[in-house]
Image (cartoon, rainbow, N blue to C red; front, side):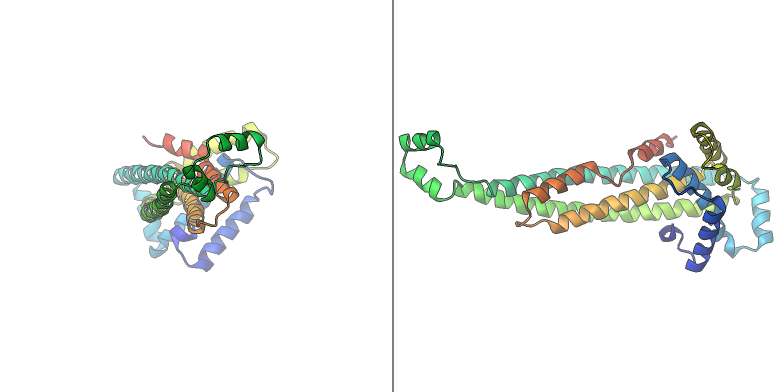
Length: 291
């Protein structure tokens, strides 16, 4: 949130610390939906930061005149910002798919160059070689069972895959910057149009002694109360996940070289496809918010 809101650090930490103490969040892990409701409560507290430029009288007069709701223009704007945000997230995911193919191509090319020569210790293999021994076959074995043309082609493939991955990262960087700008726009839009939400009901009722059913009811009622703040919070959460995913990809690409072991490349491909920083449950919830 400090990235998006960029307030005075002392102001931010005072508000956040005071909020967390008041909520008494249980030390044990919470589900994604519970974390989401806490984030909504926290951001409603932090939205007040944007009203610091107004006097209290001006701020509450504006909120009273708007009836405590988003004005129609702001409703349309927040919907449009969220739609644009998810469109760019989709473009980022397309780049991830393309990058995964390039990474796999790099792995295949390097594994081919490292392909071991034929083991002639086997009696069957040795008998086949002797039965078909030619100058061409002898040269092939002396070259380590590598064809010059295939070696050149695979070296070219490795170079192409590396360049392609760097190009994908460059495009992903642009999308990431656009996502950050959209998050800032969404928070600014909500902050300018929405009064300070009361987070007491959501925060205080997240009691560690409550049953699972009661917690789900609390989260559900809390989400209904906050309305359009959902969009700004959801964008912030998704942006954080995408940024971590990008950082992982960047480290993988920067570490690729001809000395990368087969085990390393296998792990890189697995991590790239699994995308451990992306929570699918949250992504599904985000798409449900598209009207």
